Image (cartoon, rainbow, N blue to C red; front, side, top):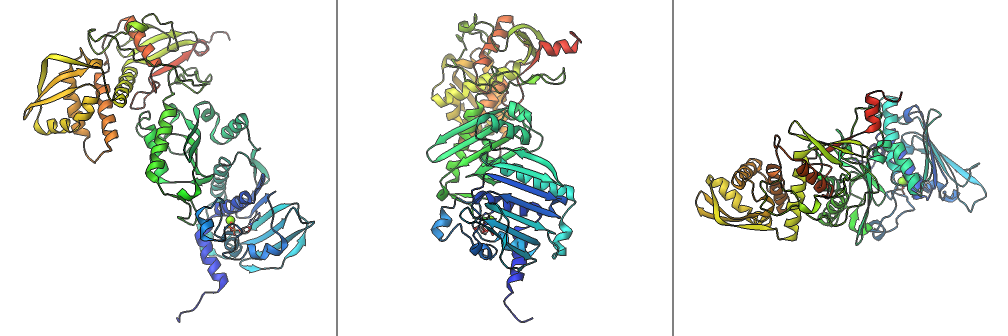
Length: 580
Ligand code: ADP
Ligand code: MG
């Protein structure tokens, strides 16, 4: 075949393949146009999974009759005029491709009216052939109807799934968009039944209603609001508590400047922020919105605009990790118990949302180091009034502490709780750069094989920051001249040996220094924490509970497991069919 230039209609059909993959893509383009037009109310009507009809009706600025033809012309847009505009883009659209692409593969009717106009006008476009602009009855705003999608593209039509599947994509898309703009009201109907009615939600209570409709009541009661600003970066939204983490990453919503995105830098940052509190293989739930200078982010990375590129991705990443970490640090045992659960057996794990006021002065409660073992009772909290984790009554099977509080009973995993307490203390002394440390008159020595010793000494700085002084006195001999006050009295030699071999096992891959330090602390905390079968006295148990109450993130151990569970009196009553 000789080379020739494709005709415009064919170009539109080819381009449609890129932008319009399925009915949900049409909904996305039309709703984004409505938002760009400043709509405050958007109604979306769907028939037969979007194959029959997609109608989006908005009360936005409208299109003047004289512009209607241009609106369906390729590369015609009112949103940018120059490269400079592209750099600072604030609208969702800017390519001028959606309407001509949709028009190329469906029967489309566009009716619109600006506020200045007395009358509306309409234009039809059928499989790429554009009709004439005519007067039409229309309120200010725009209504776009798309019928028989892909009627002229059988290949694409075959890829469309059942109505149910396509509709599922649409509802998920509308929910995703609705979480980006609480100031706009959305209605979605399918086959004339209202599926979503989301009034505008300018205030917190209404926002919670919208969140509950989309993510469920449980997300609302088990999430924390987040709102952190640093220079030009602003992160806001809601993060599910670690105990609300899920088996699939299905409740994760990211927005950059109100644009829904799926971006690696952001996903990694969340992982980093949850690093300390999430059980392995679980996925956090969240709605997170990042506001950033439009200049510092490129949204033109892909036609569907799901991917973005940050100019300073490291800075964005670190900001998010810190903001999440700080927010999640509030998950202490003193948070409100969960709303009464339906099943009497469903204890509420790991605290809950509430006015999660962090406690003032989380003073470290480890007492004088002459007390035996790693487990030390803090004199200062000995007489503390019974508080949120209650008063210890007994130890169960050498694993759990049974406590009672005003609401019922509390079960505490003593190892998990102590592990978190130690871990937070180690991290705190690391960030202060000085740990309480105890010199030994006689250094302790231990023999290790050379690679293990090498590896251990490679992290010497971190060991020293938490209060060790290490000295190699032979190719395979290590001397400990100082040990952390925190660990004084425990079998430090065995501890160091265990941690060194655990680090050797975990080795592999270059690690960010900070992450390496945290791994060391986590391993130290895990090995040093009281182990099962240790008999604790009641004062020791109570001291642990008081320390947990004063420890950030104490609702989970550093592997993300819950550290305590509550069973309320009403739950106990139900168990025994009392009061029925
Ligand atoms: P883009 O959104 O990239 O500009 P589109 O093909 O989606 O391209 O739309 C073309 C133009 O039509 C837009 O720039 C806008 O001026 C106009 N338009 C489309 N939909 C609407 C609407 N709902 N309300 C007002 N104007 C609209
Ligand atoms: Mg558009």
